[in-house]
Image 1: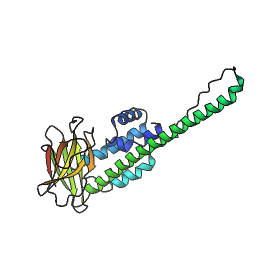
Image 2: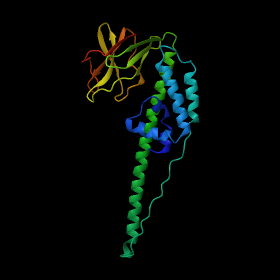
Image 3: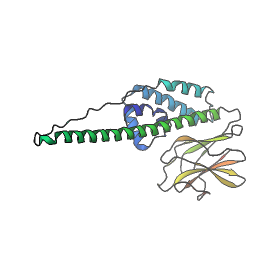
Length: 248
C-alpha cells in the first residue's frame, strides 16, 4: 500500500472499517502525516457525536461540512522505484541481444502485474472509503430526521448499543461500542422483531468492537431490535438467546 492509498483511508480508519492489518499500517502512517492525523481526529469526533446520539443530535449541516472537507485531502504522486540493472558477463556475446530482450520482457511483465495489482487494491480501498463515508452521511441524515427516535441498552457480556430509527425515512441504524470479541465461529447478528417474528436485519462486521451500521430493511411494523451471536454468515432465525433488546 503506497502513500497515495493511505491518504484516502482517513474516513474508513475513523469509522473502524479497516482490517487489522490495514489499521496497523495506517496507524504507522499517522505518525508521519499531520494532515491525516488532523482529519482522522475530526472524523472521530464526528463519529463520537453519532455514538452519543441519545444525549446530543449532531447539527443538520454535518454532512455538508464533512463532504466539503473531502476535496482538501492531500494527494501525493506514486513513488517511482528505479529498476536495478545487473551487468551480464562478456561470455557468449552472441546471446546478449536475446538475454537483454528476455530481461526487458520479464521486467515489463512484472511491472505490469504489480501496476494492475496496485490499481486493483487502490480501487478496493477507495470503494471501502466511499461506502464508509456514504454510510456515515446516511446515519447523520437519519439522526437529524424530525421523527428520529433513540433507544440505548447494555448487552449481556459487555458493550452497549443504540438504535436510531425514522419511520418517515424508512431507515434504522445501529451504533455500538465496546462489543466483546466473539469466537471465530460466531458473529453478531441484528433482528427486527415484528409481531413475535424475528427478521434478519444485518451482521456486525467481525473484529469490530465499535462502529455504526445501517440496518437491512426499514423499521415499519417492528416493535424492537434484538442482537444475538450466530454462526459465520448469519442465520435465518436466531439460534441463541438475545444479548440485548432495544425498542424501536
